[in-house]
Length: 355
Ligand SMILES: Nc1ncnc2c1ncn2[C@@H]1O[C@H](COP(=O)(O)OP(=O)(O)OP(=O)(O)O)[C@@H](O)[C@H]1O
Image (cartoon, rainbow, N blue to C red; front, side, top):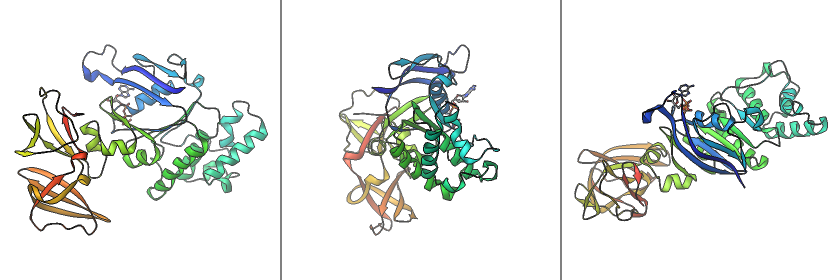
């Protein structure tokens, strides 16, 4: 059974939306399976929080329906949706002990004391909070408090989903990577459906099995981290995910074959269905560009050492083409030629990949 289904969702904060820009969410249709680890990824203002609030019931969508399994929950308030939420900033009771904070969501629902005790200890152990159970929450650092918030989100075994809204914002940078992998482990141990909202690609790609990439109120791709990397459906995904992002080069067609300044480019995209588009681009990630004996002539203009690999910036005419080379790979001193791996080179028409 599909755990969570969003059907024909649209949302506007404007009373009588008319223009496209009046819609904070333009069109969302999605099915999220029971027990999955999902991330909602996108820059500030793309509609992540709006979507999260529609799922949790804080916002009623202007159009469309929300289903939990077979049940239409669109008109149900938050407390009847059986969802746990962890917010950016800790939501805890300072005067209570760590133990009582973790126990609160269970006691509130009348769970028997022995079960409360075993569940609290189990979650505390997962989050390395066992030593602190008897301490008052007020004495803890911001990191410690946010761990309690995470624990409160995870403690109920009966929730339909746990939603995390940028939960690592207040966490110290050196602890962030620890908690990032911890959350992945927790998903495997707890087994609940988890939805993680973030603008940080590393957090999303570390945590999620499936990532929903949002851009200007739309879902531009819903896929595994590998799919987002290997075959971005939209130029936004290519550009936003990856470091550095995808090269996007101007493209023309000659008898249906893509050309870059007269150089014929082999791609994984099939024949173009239409040429009636405003912008035609070739997309290739820096990982799939290499120096070659023959290819597109370029000038090497910059090499940046990024640890185990180098980012090489080259130029053909006024277009920059970046390469990502492994340590030890030869970098020509000045004049060179590059080629693209055809299996990882795509054509984009008005932003969308051509299959
Ligand atoms: N309560 C509101 N009233 C009016 N407009 C809103 C409201 N909340 C969000 N918006 C607008 O809706 C759009 C989507 O915002 P939303 O907060 O969902 O995006 P986001 O991706 O979560 O961004 P952030 O990470 O900055 O919160 C933005 O243009 C925002 O200005």
